[in-house]
Structure formats: structure tokens, C-alpha cells
Image (cartoon, rainbow, N blue to C red):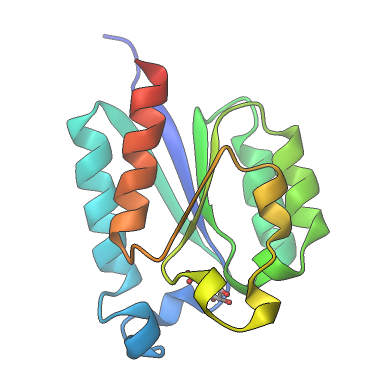
Amino acid sequence: MAMAKKITVLNGPNLNFLGKREPAIYGRETLNDIEALVHECARSHGFDIEFLQTNHEGQLVSFIQDAIGKSHAIIINPAAYSHTSIAILDALKMFEGPVVEVHLSNIHKREAYRHHSFVSERADAVIAGCGSAGYRFAVEYIVQRDL
Ligand code: DQA
């Protein structure tokens, strides 16, 4: 049997505190809960998931570089680095597959400094404001693109 295609899911700074962190904005689910949800959704469509979190910008760049030639798609919640990081944008520009940017909250409904994301310039799709379901929608988008 052919090996399942891999989707790399990357999570940026402070997302390891989900569940405890500003629950009115980000919800009560933990990152582990989201990982389980994404795994289940991907598995049902025959995809493998690699689910990673880091608080460090350069580590996100390295995770993206590691996905080049190995992963079919990247789902990324760059968190606050969305609004600041050209390095993450440049790394994503080297990746050849679909890229989906996910934000739990609707960044456009929040402070003006969250309205712009550098990453969106490379993203094929952007999902914001759907909470943890946004990660599932991202997997489903990647699946349907492939059909
Ligand atoms: C976030 C939105 C960002 O503005 C913020 O810095 C985050 C999380 C979200 O998922 O809604 O850390 O990416």
C-alpha cells in the first residue's frame, strides 16, 4: 500500500497555553484537544499528520524547511508572528504544496495590529474565527483540492 500523504500542522507562540490562555477569545480546548481532532479528521481521509508547536520564530522557519519535499501540505497558525514575520513568509514561499493559514479568532474583528498577516501573501486559504474547527476545515480544504 502506498504511504499516506503527510500534512504538517504548525503552531506558533503561546498556543501551548490554549485552554488557559484568554479563554473568552481562544476557547477552552487545549492544543492536545486540537491535535486529536486534526488527527481524526486527517486519518478519516487517509492523510497522516505531523503536529508541532514552538514559541520560536526560527524554529518555525526550520519546521517549514523540514516539510519541503516531505509534506504534501502545511497548515499553519503562526500566532503573533503572523503580524511580524517576513522570515516565515519567505520559508513558506519555498514550500511547493498547499498552505492554509488558520487563526482561532477572527483577527479582523480585533486590534488593528492583528488585521495584517504577512503569511497570507503565500497562503492558498485563510481561515479565521472558526475556533478549533478551523483546523478541521483546513484539512478538508486540502483533501478536496486533491480530489
Ligand atoms: C491567533 C491570532 C493572533 O493575533 C495571536 O497573536 C495569536 C493567536 C489566533 O489563532 O487567533 O496568538 O493566531
